[in-house]
Length: 581
Image 1 (cartoon, one colour):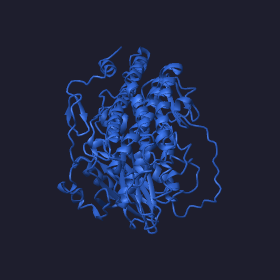
Image 2 (image 1 turned 45 degrees about the vertical axis):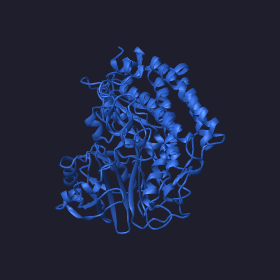
Image 3 (image 1 turned 90 degrees about the vertical axis):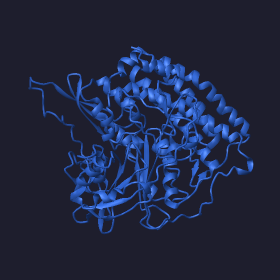
């Protein structure tokens, strides 16, 4: 069952026509990528003008123009922005309560150009926080609005399934509302799970459905995730991911910390797969935009190198765990992945002082320079890079060339590109469906525009494609790290500035709002911050890529068999700390 995809990946060759480089151009292997500047927003048509008849006013954010619309005109506005202007990516939904109103913000982008953004702001009165649901326009709004209802208390008309998502249905009150009583006792009763299709099939000869609980404590769920799967025989006819078992109030802890010193340690904890440095960058990029901070060129190279090592760390765990999920391979593939992760963790420990919770980024740069002696550090990194091609060949021998794994993954868990977009999928999940979307290239930051690397996509959209994308992305990350090492080795000593001059206390202007994102290991990791003039955020909202990716699981699993469901879930590389936050 070896396919052309297997042979191409195993040989490291580029398919005919080349790959998309960091500049957005097509280049042959080894050809330098030209750098293309991001489009200038002023040259674009103002999306707010298209909503003039629906708008109550403007509410521009630092990252995007904003328009305020009536609560009963949400769908009209969003349909117009999606169908007429091409805003096909609902990146995030933010909800909050003010003294005089509630507010929902829909952060819209384009998959073809994520720098073209618009915010749709929907205010509702304090005594009647109800507005139209965006779910008929963007399928991903389902979970996002359920979270807003659960935590803030806003209700959404026309929502297909408006119920709590992180807290149990018996919970009293909404934790992020201003009148929530934290001292009120909560009683969570045990209610037997009900079959969502039939109340009782024991005496019905026309069907044989059964409710199968998978998790929340099960190795195949990659954390405390509960899947309520309804089976008809051995086929999955309905699956409902039940989340919220590890909700840790990360957003509220960040709201309690100061911008400059106390928030940065938290992002590492959203993804314990090793992608912490990428998460730190998400906060750094957002806060630096909010406070108008520059990052020295030398620090941008350090950030880029360390972030790609962190991406390799995450992908190695994803690949190794997937071998366990699909073919039960612990002694070879999983242990090989852990071995290679150890090498990367040793490198990052030398750089950051930590093995997993790195806390290396700082607003305006990084904490410190490379360890001394620099030559020994470079030698260790190059030794890992030199041995990586042989290691990747082993993974392809064990995985992509494995007939059992191919039988389990090729053609299963198919996620068409248009469905992936409707659910707001990003990262390897979207790129495995042929969605050519990568913020490192499409919304440039760090040192990525100056380097030669490629965005990896696969068009089949199945479980095998998502595995193959991650393996190939490790190769591209290695290219980036090698180029960064080349730059750092020759960097003049007197120009090695690791951090810009940042005020000791940051107090962004009140009511300043911003949403920024980076390409984390799982996809688009975004953060929305609203400032209130103090040194702490008034609202801190995390857009975890695993949240939207996991929401698409029913589309991939329904109609397939139970083993296919496990393979599909594993292919998402879900981290529940990022889902629940």
